[in-house]
Length: 319
Ligand code: FO1
Image 1 (cartoon, helix red, strand yellow):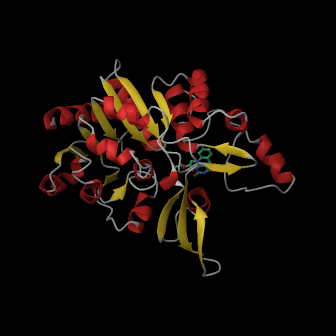
Image 2 (cartoon, helix red, strand yellow):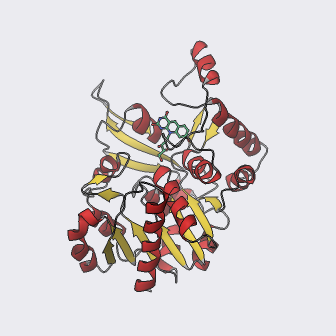
Image 3 (cartoon, protein in one colour):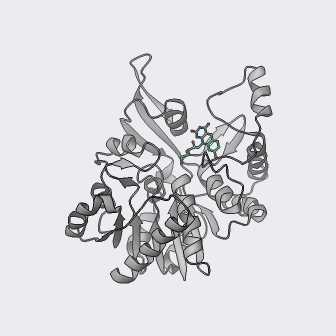
């Protein structure tokens, strides 16, 4: 069975572990969000690709959900001693090595997709990990600066990590997405899929950014395979992260049903909501999307695998 998953960082990566446990023989292609990518200290950092790669490859810091396990921060401290920042983004020594290899390969002319494949040679994540695009896309967020009162635009990581999404996001713009092309293999994987999954990743800055690359939304909508999503909103709040802040920027309420309607029946055949949101089922089905309420908290691998099985069952039912 060929499964394509459009994934962001932590939520997508953890769901993928459950999917692998539920369907060990599946041929899984992950289309990873690269809108969170940032250039720091002359290096290209790809947080969502790395989070998927480390999580499935056994190198993730399990408590944080991002970055490497058994990490140290000597390089960051040395940079700070030179007065070189930013100090708000935590890059560890082990993680630095990944960004150095990536930047070196990009500088030598390899596209990001080839670099990601090379990095995955080490980590053996058990999935084919493709960036959504080899072209540079960077999500920017318009805010009113709490210190100056002026409107300004910040990189998504500055909004998420430094500002902890505390000012309202007035607009979210995937800069470069309109000109970007899907990476090699992306459209082919979608067309050949038996199942397409939107994991409980951020609908705006993760899955939304992937869908903003011209051709990807159209390919998902035209795919012969069922498309099933899992709500990242449980009981009116994001399971993790601050998805509500960026949902508000695109005028979407933080409810499981509103996120399903945001994707729409043009994309989704099925949508899973948490049992605590069971009263959303009728509303989602009224929008033309098959819906079931099942436990959606990824508390451990068994619970996550059960979510993946529910997604497969819903795909089967909506086929
Ligand atoms: N998240 C944080 O909250 N603080 C950090 O300092 C931080 C550093 C970081 C470094 C590498 C990496 O791959 C991810 C990192 N993240 C950090 C996570 C990241 O900011 C976001 O969670 C994702 O971009 C959203 O998917």
